[in-house]
Image 1 (cartoon, helix red, strand yellow):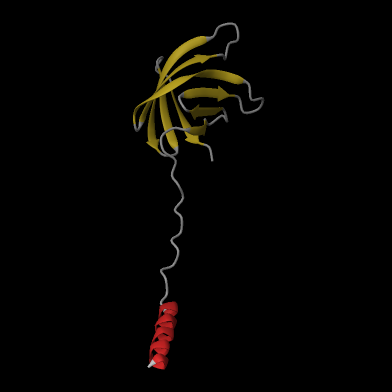
Image 2 (image 1 turned 120 degrees about the horizontal axis):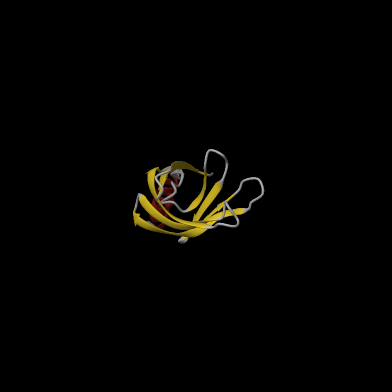
Length: 122
């Protein structure tokens, strides 16, 4: 009887080992959310959004061109209050409204009406 019980346990353990487990799921690429991160305009100027702080720097010398703050008005709309240092002797305050067209494109309009787009930097 002990032999039959031992054989049954061994057989059950063997069958359990043969049952295949499901294949590991591949991790999907994480899509960035909101505007957090680095963005670039067509001329190569880099803008960064990080925890409510906005900066823009030149791509060649990393000189600070503008800085300010931003707030998420909705999941796809961001308002930026910034000071531009493009003219060193005349810093200029402005507001910018940006709409997240898709996870990799941000369309922006300055309070002066000028428009520009930024592409997410990878």
